[in-house]
Image 1 (tube, rainbow, N blue to C red):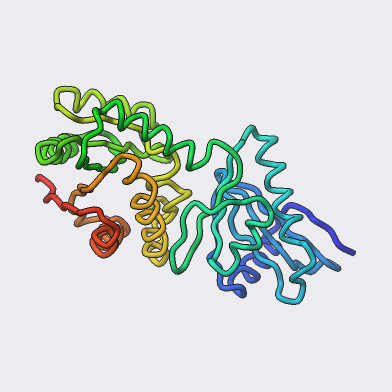
Image 2: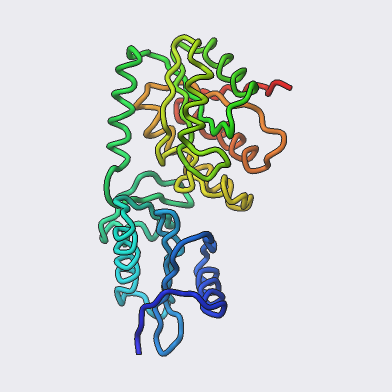
Length: 289
């Protein structure tokens, strides 16, 4: 007998983990909903919805082609919509992206190892339209710069970094990470950054939405799973270079050195490798002590 149900018991969750590992996928965790499709009480397919991100979609190789992925995604979308969500992200491997595209998901960005897809609105094109309006309001600088900050909370060190970046830029766009998984909520962090740079000329503070260092584009930044850091860093940086930088005409990106957090250190290292080849110069500033 076939059955689709939510997973709760330790045994069901262990079976889910084994299925994901057997398919070469990492095991997402966090507060969310997990589903399993069972055949004669054997788990043959699974998916999860965590923070508006559909993750951990896997089907047993013996049951491929039966439409189980569609059943699982439909369950995840219905649950999310019932919670008031109108937009969803999905991670997958490049080889699997076509099957998800046939189910209505569109590609946001892809790398050699991973693909970020989305369903619903507002989407990445809507975000780029907002950025283009911000660029026009800034006076259409030819060689703008950007810096992405979390500021949990805004410190004198952050102020120094932004001041130095602004001094070296025709115009500086400060993208504040919108993800609300820090100690200080986004609204408070955004306000502190705005107030902290109010006296600096040619600086615009904007929200990153879900397209820069969020749990959608770079989940290992928040989960601290260093083994995933490089894959997700490449995805996030490629998204920045292909969507955000062109919309704001950004030619330089500033970062501060990171001697303590290994995940952020990996992220900065990947930026050094990738950004120049994508037309964006990376400027790393030594953190003030």
